[in-house]
Image 1: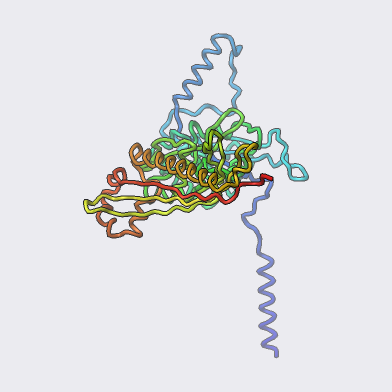
Image 2: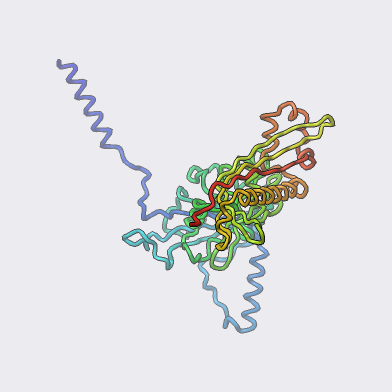
Amino acid sequence: MKKPLRKAASLLMATLLMLGVTGCWDRVEINERAFVLALAVDKFDYSEIEEKKEQEQKEQEQGETGGRQQQDSVRDPVDSPRNRLVVSMVFPNVGLLKSEGAIIPEDAKFALSTVGPNIFEAVRQLNTRMNSKTFFGHVKAVLVGEELLKDKKLFLEVLDQLERDHEIGRKIYFLAVKGKAKDALFIKPLVEPIVGRYLDQIFQQRRTGRFHGKNLGQIVTSIRETGAALVPRLIVGEKEFKVAGACVIKDNKHRGWLGEIETRAAQWIDNMAGQGIISVDINGISTPFELTELKRQLKISRDERGNIYLDILLKAEGNIAGHILEVHEEVMDEKFIAKVEEAVNKNMAAQCSGVMNKLQKEFRVDIWGIGDHIRKFHPEIWDDIKDNWKEVFPEMRVGISADIKVRRVGIIK
C-alpha cells in the first residue's frame, strides 16, 4: 500500500508544481494594445513631398502662413531607395468607449502613417511614435493604392507579406483604391467613424452585386495560380467612401477598372449573385426585378476545325418589386409575368455579353477560371490548348443566355 500511496503523492506534488509555475509569459494588457482595424499600403512617391514643399514655400512668400515654423513632430520622408511603401493604419480610441459599448464619434479613432522598405519594418517604425503594441488580429480590411497595384514586383511583395503574417486572417477584405489608399483612413465618414468596421459592415450586408465579394485568401489564391483576379474597388470622397466596381488584375498587376454594372455581370458569370435589382422597361414603366437566386451552367464544345465554343446559361429566380399602382391587377397576369421574364432574360444576357467581350478583347484575361474548368472536365481539349490558352481565350466563341423565373409579385391587395 505504501508504494501506490508514494506514487500518488509524487504525482500530486508534480501537478501542483506545474500549476504553480504556469502563466502567460507573453501577456499584454488589453489597454496596452492598439487594435488595428484597417491597413492601407501605397507606393511611396517623393515627387509629392517636393510638390508639398514648393506649395508651402509659395504660401510663405505670399505671406499666407506668416512665416512657417516647424511644428510637425515627424519630418517629411527623404528620397531614399529604402522608402518604397507608405504604410498607414487606423485603430479605435478604446478610451472613449462608453459603458454601454457605444463609441463616441469625436476622436473615435487614430490614424498613423509612415514610410519604409516593406510593411513590417514600417510598422516597427510606427512603434517609435506609439505607446501601445500594435495587434493585427482584428484587421477587417487591407487597402492597396492604385500606383502600388501597377508595380508588379512591389505588389507581389505586399501580397506575400500579408499572406505570411500569422495575425492577419485570410477572410479579411482586400480592396483596390482608386487613388491613394491612405486617404480612406484619414477621412471622417458620416455614418461610422471607425473605417475598418465601416468596410466590414458594407461587405457583411452586401445587398448588391455591384462590388466583388471575395476576400484576401481567395484573391491571393487566384493571383498565385493564374496571375489574374477581380479586386473590389474603393472610391474615396471627402466625407464618405464607396465600394463599387472592380480592379482587373492581369499578369500580377493592375490593368484597368470595371464599372459597377460590369462588375455585377462578371459575378453572374462567376456563379455569384448578390441581392441585386435589375430594372427593365415594361410598357414604358421602369420595373424593378429583385434577383434572389442564380445558378450558372457552362458547356464547352469543339468543332471539326478546332474552334472552342463556350455556352453560358444563367438560371435565376426573383421577384417583381414594383410596377404602377393603377394597373396592379395586370401584375398577376401570366402574359405580363412572361413579358417581365423575357425582358430580364435579354437584359442579363446583354450585360454578361458586354463584360465578357471586354475581358476577352480588351483585357484578354480569364478572370473566371474557364481554363481550369476545361482542364477538369474536358482534359482532351485542354491537352491541345493548355500551352497557348492566353491566345485561345480571346478568340473563343461565347454564347450567353438566361432563363429567369418570377416567383413572387409582392402584396398588391
